[in-house]
Length: 255
Image 1 (cartoon, rainbow, N blue to C red):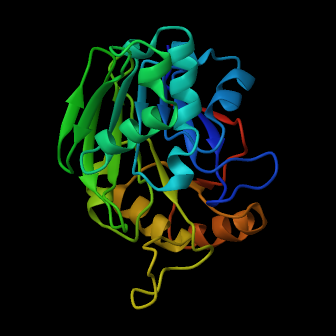
Image 2: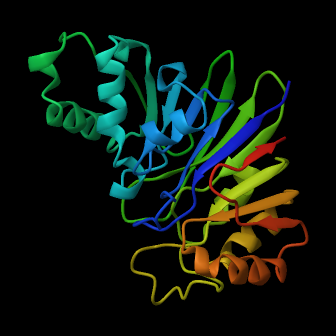
């Protein structure tokens, strides 16, 4: 019995052909963000989307929820939407899910009680089920975001993921003692200039400094062009003593 993380997307907001914006799957049951192509990613990995128990959003910028309507439609088509639970930042979760259902004209074509269970969280909240525990912290981004620490109840293993954010030390506190940190590096192989970071992202050096402060064993970088991946990894290695990787699409990590 292991904790498994399968990476579906590592690209920027507009993904390269054959890639996707950031999204990953935990234990074949919990999907973090949807990217552009959640249904294709899941089915291509051999997972029926109906097997998802939870959908977890880091924040609601377009590249992180674009395929939410198609995922909801898949559940609606099988009469299973009531079984899906969706976690995300409290400021936007209910509104964005409602808009996706309105886009589908769900009340016209499906039963009115066919809605998912929504679990809005504020930074600092935690959420626990029989299968896992989530602890959260704030991020620094133009919309409300959450950094998460996921603890697998079956294995006791923990890992953390940043979502989109500028350099933010509370993420290191959240990740302390965990095996792995997944951190964005949208700005490439550098540290962000605090005076010139209007979109509030991190470079790979920022991510490495968070990983070093957290004392994790491994850092996974994502959310950028594949052409800069190697340079991002090399820059991060100058700041972080553990393992650094830029995952491949479909790569699975076992904790």
